[in-house]
Image (cartoon, rainbow, N blue to C red; front, side, top):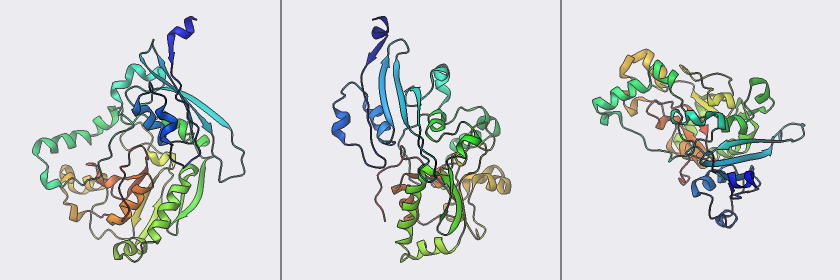
Length: 309
């Protein structure tokens, strides 16, 4: 009875087959489960969720379980599970709740509008410098990786590499996490279907490489890069023609004024290519103030519903 009173149990269990969308009638009947939690569940519908309100912690306790993939190999599937607390949308283990203020939320509106550096104020420039400084990048909590560590089996290099597969993207060899094989192949098919658009054909013809999996930390931090998960891919052209493509390289070349490089002097994939990636759950690093124009990253929980070109 005491255990019963300590938890207000509100079942929000959902079992789905990826990549089918969640029928709204399944979750709408669970009136007490917050809409933002239901929404987050909908982005990874192959998982099973059980949400319980923990009175002692004054937060939603979410148990997540699902199959290890192994869909592109001969290995059999096996179940895994983990427990997180919602923590204002940060999906943290109980041990990290005391530190939740240092982390960013996982689910937010993806800002897919380019910021013209000509409009930056002097205060904004100073804030960008500080944000990109080594000390800030090292000390900030950044994106909480705990849910992604579970989702992609990224507890160690040896474990995740059981889920890294070799494939190609637009004819270029690459290694990716098996979980994103289908969305990335969908991107490829959609791009190839648009070769009648000159900018798209140029993107394909001038593509040098499409590197994805690479186990490493984000430069200047102690956090794993999403390349370490095999869900980020860098589409590098054969020639840059003197244009900027990545803020870090530009900082080495231009110093502290790197963020002021005009948009027209940055290498950029065609708008059609960007929208195709977005339509399959990827975000583009060119929209970031700390720009990374060759970089696409699989985050269906962030992508706006933007129509294909």
